[in-house]
Length: 62
Image (cartoon, rainbow, N blue to C red; front, side):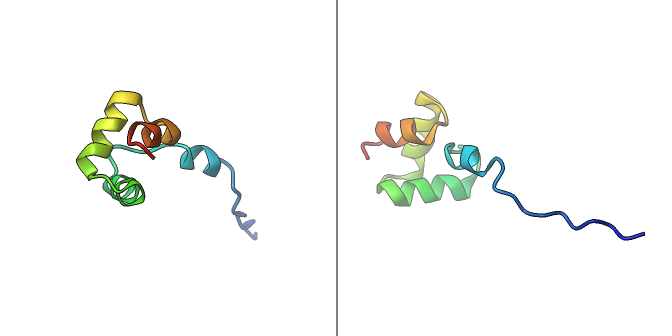
């Protein structure tokens, strides 16, 4: 019996990109490099305004 191959979809990808995971170092580093701020500043912004990327970037002055 053959097993059907799973196809890759973009489901959930847009939602994931709209968030900054403050506990994930690679996401914090990416956002820090993108905005020109420190990783600590990004973590503080996530804690202050939540994990919505547009709110974090607004808080960081981008």
